[in-house]
Structure formats: C-alpha cells, structure tokens
Image 1 (cartoon, rainbow, N blue to C red):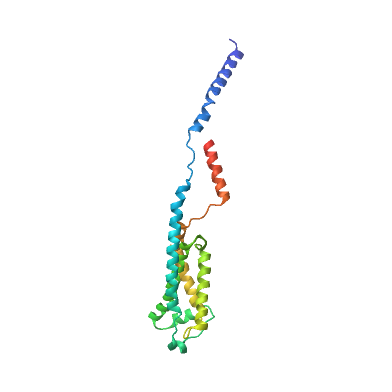
Image 2: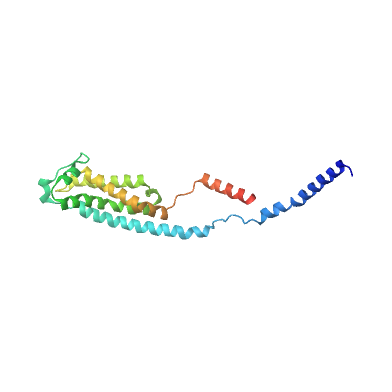
Length: 210
C-alpha cells in the first residue's frame, strides 16, 4: 500500500465519523428544556394585590387630608399679632433656629417635616404614576402650596410661609427615600417595554437553539 492510498483511507474514515456524529446534534438541542413561559393566570393575583394596596393607600390619603385640614386650616385669632407672611426661603427656618426655646424649635421644624412624610409613604403605593421621586416632590409641593395659600388668604391667624412648604417636601422626600421607594417598587414594578420583551424573546430563542 502506497502513501497516497493510506492517506485517502484516513481522510475517508474521518469523514465517515463526522457524518455519524452530525445527526446527534439536533437531538441534543431538542432535549434541552424550553424557556419557561409566564401563564396569564398568575398575573391576576398580583393585579388584585396592587388594587387592594392602592385602595388602602387611597383611604390613607383621605384620612391624612382630614388630619392635615384640621391641623392647618383652623383659625387662631390669638395669633393674629404674631403672624406674618414669608416669601423668602430660609427666613423662618433661620428664625426657628435662632430662638432660645429648643423645644419650640423642634416642634416647628420637626412638626413640618413629619407632616410631609405621609406623602412619601402613601403616594408610591397609590399608583405606578405617583411612585417616582419627581412625582412625589411635585405633588407634595403643589398640595402644600395650596394649603399655604388658603391659610394666608382665608384663615384668621394663619399666614403663608414658603419655608413650611420646603420642610414638608423635605419630609416627604426623606420618607420616600427611606421606605416609600422600596414599597412602591414592590407593589408597582416597572413595566417592561416592548423592546425589552423583544430582546428577551430573542435571547430565549437563541438559548433554545444553542
């Protein structure tokens, strides 16, 4: 047997072995489990929970609105000589910090901070549209500005104070960053955009073929 015949047999034998192994690849691919598909029935309990939590948050907001109205919209004739409007941010806060009575300072500053915290806790639970940082800040500012305007224009012994709005908003954002953000993401997770779903399907298809 010459060298050419020997080399030809080696090449032919390698080709035959490769052809025998080739059909096994589709079987191995078919044996891999398909990616799990979320059943529509599983989404219903999650939706019911979100609706229930939203209703509880709405009831909490109504109760908080009642408490807020009683605390801020009651007339105080005895305070008329002491009240004055403040349109300069930081002016009232500076006055609170400079007064000698520490307890009164804590009541004024801490009370306004606590008064804004329910916004940061309840708004993220109310809806997906109100669970963001910007939404919480804007809704808190809008609500408290309205309250301050009513105080200054209609309530005896009350005055408009821009620092109260700043303190209320700070309390709302603090509560949001501490607890409200996590609660909002747990109850109202972000929706997957259509391009994210398409990428997930493409990845699942590629893994199924690989």
